[in-house]
Image (cartoon, rainbow, N blue to C red; front, side, top):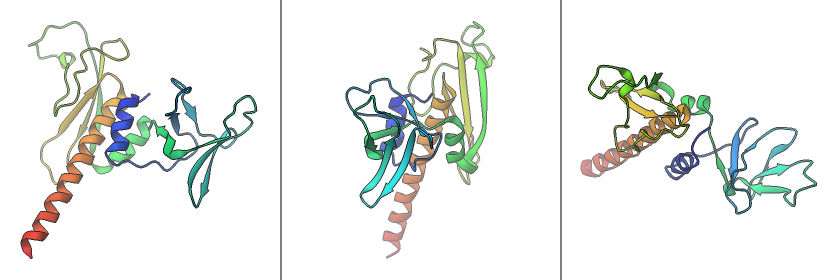
Length: 182
């Protein structure tokens, strides 16, 4: 499951959630620490109102919670959703297993850090020696970018953050170019 801090970074970078059945989320309100919810037509339904999207909890008489605004929730995209969001820049996912080889060898298992300023993954979140690597190629680019993490969803999230950042920088360049042309 996607790390909550990465999910927040995606949201803060501009990723918007359109709730659908099967989506996982957390409620960012005290008292719900560690609770992960899944949208389901039977238990948690999406209700669209002019004032915003509400997530309605059905059959929850033991709770004092009838609904929560989607804006008060944090979407935890699944691996398939993150891959879909990467679209045409996605090239592949590789799984590397640490076999105990020493740094400096030619083994794929020596992956310990993520390029581009992403956090060090040498302390695996899942406690194992497995590292996932998502490869992307920016549109029009000729060089692959690699994004690594100890959980596949996290590697996809790092790739998506880089993709969003590159898109925003491209937008800034286009605005500057238009301004210079005037």
